[in-house]
Length: 462
Image (tube, rainbow, N blue to C red; front, top):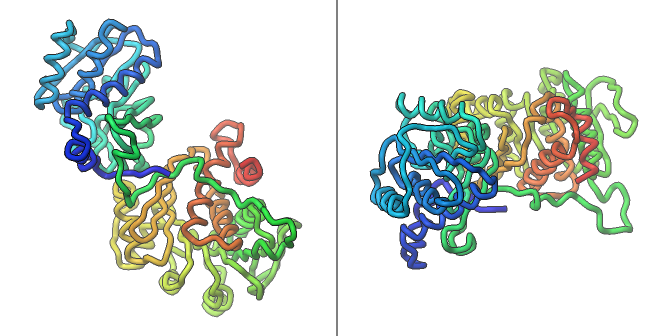
């Protein structure tokens, strides 16, 4: 698990003041990281497009460090304007480097135009420049953040499409917004003269990593099924959703799994069925495929009378009943952006559109989590967000293979399984999200072909 930051400016200033490192030294280290990535690809011709500010300064310094190793095509469409960019240009030229007057084809392209300081939409000239870069062939590297992505992680309105982003100092929150995912490529962090342990300070934002997954392995030998919890899932109009969630929960370690419905239901033989809430329920999952299946009295008996940990999904975010459930302790909510918009409106926290939520995913998630600090929110997306109180965790390990009906039901089952086994809601959401993403990566088939059944089966490989 790594720290994430909205802004690393304070961390840079801490380097100046605490470690006596100058801005110049930090830029040289940034350039070294950029140049090392270029070297890894063995390119003969390298086009570096540098902007007028310090992001451009990083690119110009990297160009100097690469002189003599490959053909450097350094293009400055807007000149060098910041003091550091001007200094780096003087050094580059003193070392014998030359500028090109237009972009030329190359084996490798480095984008060092704007970096993380972009605050307004690209003008027409900049937009055309980035479009031309995206059309060029060659491996593409972004310096710090792909040009065109703003501090929120939103393209304004287009951005450089990188194969690799070399980001400076520490991971930045903007790189992990859903809207940035198609532009950033693989993300690598470069140290700036001190190790990350010295450079970083504690942050409310965390980046989850594969090694953070700790599946519910069984350690004790003298056990029985009752030692691993009893998850109850409420089936609704689309009963398949609850059944998929139930099968995922059984695969993920729950000792007993019961599907409840108010009318007879055909289910796989390994699951149990009931028409009422079992007395020894240790966690409840509700909402997936629910529809309008239950009367108020039935819902009261099955859900509102249950005071065990609960994972809530799908249709319930559109229902006024969600307000009663939000008062409960130990709940996990798993909406996708459209459902989250309905939830925000229902709770009176705002009326954003789905697209507005996607632009401001982090701030909306935190707004909800701070209003309901006892709840855990898992906002689905390309990079799922888990928010609890003032803390926010980002899972960057998802894959587009999960964009299919039923994937979210499997996630509900995983979280419910962990709640039933005694996990705290925050840990259940984190571990369920990681298992969900990493199981998808275990399936060796084309990304369009993944099914919920494949995903459930892959859980045994974690």
